[in-house]
Image 1 (cartoon, rainbow, N blue to C red):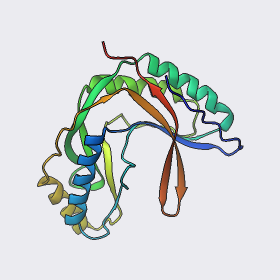
Image 2 (cartoon, rainbow, N blue to C red; image 1 turned 60 degrees about the horizontal axis):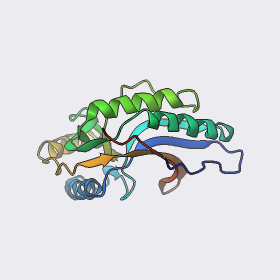
Image 3 (cartoon, one colour; image 1 turned 90 degrees about the vertical axis):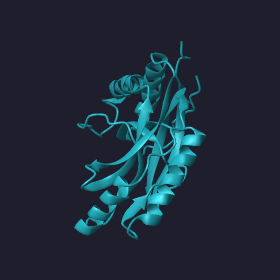
Image 4 (tube, helix red, strand yellow; image 1 turned 30 degrees about the vertical axis):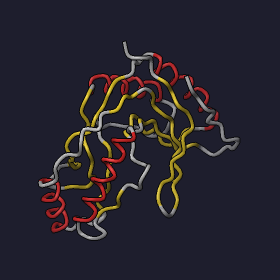
Length: 205
């Protein structure tokens, strides 16, 4: 089980989240889809996720006190040990809150969603009291492509129509053998993510 230390040696809280990274083929398919949508969408209407930063969030923790990070790593290690590896693939594109009123553009997932949901619940239980973020929304597995910056009704209609005529990406299935703990640093150019720890799942039966 591979875990790198999350200790930073400072008293500053760690803005953290737990996520699964897509496989290489899935990442390439996501970037191709993002580029195709960006070329067809109204200019500057969407803040697109930068290459290499697309991930499947299991739990956003918000700010975690640095002295709680070792406990967080221990709990995540235990959650990983209780979970067997599984497979995921890419599905249809969509939007939150609805396709007619898009605010976040995403790609859905296919594969062993039951195992994914169970893992998300274990991670949520492990990390629930360690960060300052409280999540009330139901877990909806997705990979974010971009966030809508222009709330004009004409832009919403154009994006909705664009999604409706966009075919799904290739499935690009990949094996999920681990999840990771990330630090998120907010900078003027956008959030920058760094890996704090990797947590291996049990081999699939």
